[in-house]
Image (cartoon, rainbow, N blue to C red; front, side, top):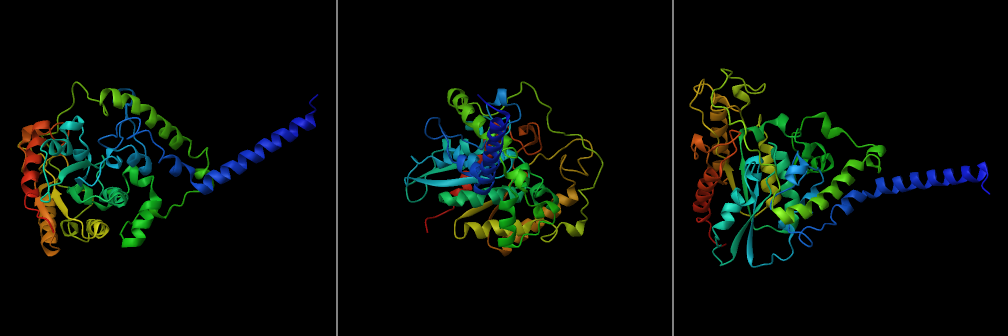
Length: 371
C-alpha cells in the first residue's frame, strides 16, 4: 500500500514541520513563556529561596539559569500575600541564600521569626532573593526582575569579592542571561569588559535542540515541588564538611589588582550605582557582610582565604567613603561575628551566627521611620 515515494513525502513533510516548529520556537522564545507556568504557590508552597543544588536526589533541588522560572517558584510571588505586609527583599550571595542552613535558619527566616512591624503597623516580611556566586551584576539582574513585583525595601549584602570586575559575568546565572546583562549594560553604561557580553546566541542555540536542557530543567523543577512540599528540604546537608580555612598562605596577591586599583574605578561601583537607580526612591540598606577573621598562621597577612589585609582594608575605606558621599544607608558588619560561628567558608555562618546578625539588622531597621 505504501510506496517509497509515499514514504519519502511523509519524511519530507515531517522534516519541514520540524524545521518550522523549531523556527517558531526560536523566534517566540517559548521557554520564557513556559517558565512562568508553575505549580509553586498553587499546588505546592512557594520556595523560600531560589532553586540551587548540585546533588538533585538529596537536595530535591537543582540549579537552573531561567530567572523567570526561579521567581515563579519563589514565595515572593505568592499572590495571597496582600497589602497587609511590608515586603523586604534580601540580595546577596550564598551567605544570604543560606549554605548549610535550613530555610528557617537563614537570615530571612530568622528575621521573619521576629515578627517585626513597620511603623505604619504592617508586618515586615523578609524574602530571601540571595543566590550563590559572588557578583554584583548577578544581584542587580535579580533586583531588576524583583522590582516588577513591588517590594517595599531592599537589604543588599555585599563583600569585596562581589565587586571584582572579572567576577561580574563568571556567575553561571549571569553568563546564561547575557541578554539581560546587555540591556542593563546599555541602560546604565556598565563597564563589563568581557567578550561574553558581545556574544549573540545563534539560531541553533534558540531551537528545541539547543534549549533541551532548559526545558528538561523546567520539568524537573516542577517535579521537585512534590518533595519540597513533603519535606521542606531544598539543599543537601552533609554529615561532615571541611571547615573554613584558619591557617593561611603567606600570599599578599589579590587577583591581578594593585593597591591603586582598589578604587571606585577599579571595582564595580558602577554596578552598585545601577542598583540604586533601579530602585529609585525605595529605601535600601547596604551592608558589608560579616566574614571570618582568622587568628591562625599568616593571619597578619590575610584576614581569610579570600582577602589579603591590604586589599580588604582599602575596600572598606572606599565603600565607607562612597556611602557617605552618596548618602546611603550603610552598615559595615565585617567583624560582627566571632570566628567560631563560620562553617565551610569565610562568609557562611552557623545558625547562631546568623541569629546574631539578624539581631543587629533588627536594630538597624528600627531607625527607619514612615515617610
